[in-house]
Every structure is written in C-alpha cells, then in structure tokens.
Image (cartoon, rainbow, N blue to C red; front, side, top):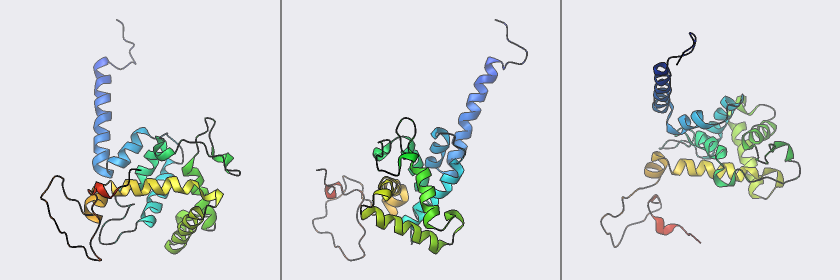
Length: 211
C-alpha cells in the first residue's frame, strides 16, 4: 500500500484519536462532565458559547446559590443544552403555537435556546446578558409567570425549566446536599423527626407518584 507523503501514517491517526479522547477527559475534569458532554455532542452552532452562558445564568436564577451551590454552579445549564439536543422531556416535539413558527427547523424541531435568548433579550430591554442582576431576575420571573398562566408565547419555557430542575436535582450537590440522601437499604427508623427545616430526601422514591 502506498501512503501519500502528506497523508498521516496509520499509527499517527491512532495517536490523534487518543489525543482527542484525552482532551475530552481533561475537558471533563476542568468544566464538569455535563459541560464536556455538550462540547462533544452538541451541534457546532456559532451561538453555542452564547447559549452556554445564557443557560448557566438562567439556571442560576431559577435555583440561586444559598448555603449550597446554585443550578448554574453545578452545570445544570450545560445539562439543559444537552437535554435539548437529545430531545429530553419532549424537546423535539413540534411547537405549533401561532407566532413561534420561526423557531422551528426544517425537521420540525423547536430551537428552544434561540427562542429563550430572544425572549429574554426582549424582556430585559435589549441585552439580557449585560443587564443587571435585578433586570435579569425580573425577566426570568416574568417569563415563568406567563408560562404558568398559560400564555401561548411562553410555553417553551416549561421544557427548559423542567430540564434545569432535572439537571440540578440529579447532580451530586442537588441530590445529596440541597436534599438529604440516605442509601437504601439502610437502617429502619420507625419514627423520623420532621421539623420546618428538614430537607426532603432525594432517595425517598415512595414520595413519587408514578401515576
């Protein structure tokens, strides 16, 4: 077999693959697994950096930092983008609301990130990313209020907020710090004291209604 002078040797190609995989591992260590997964699998959109910052800020507003890290801190924003890319929570279902047609791609998928960026810019008076924190909080709160009041143009927010909550409460911080976690099976306590400050248990599956 003849290999062109400017073609990589087969062994070189193998090293390039290993270097790429090693880079993903280092990226995961640096920015967290959720963000690394987005970098590896999300479409290479020119606005992806903007959307990553947007989702991080929005997640942090939805669940802010208290005595535990907020949703933006733990990478829930990156999880939202990953979930949207893979259709989690019905994200790939067509949105047929009149006035939102321009956010659907040729295959019918709704572009939640682009919709959210433009919607929050509008509510923040032009530039959500550079607005002050009170203005950004007001923009997100207004969108949330409209979505749960069944305003048609705000309905895509439900998918995004659900993914923020899922990303946060399935993270280590959300599942074992913000909430209590008790490995099951553990010891049996017939009577557990509950006070106004008692946190819910993320491992209490009996509290979930499976319908």
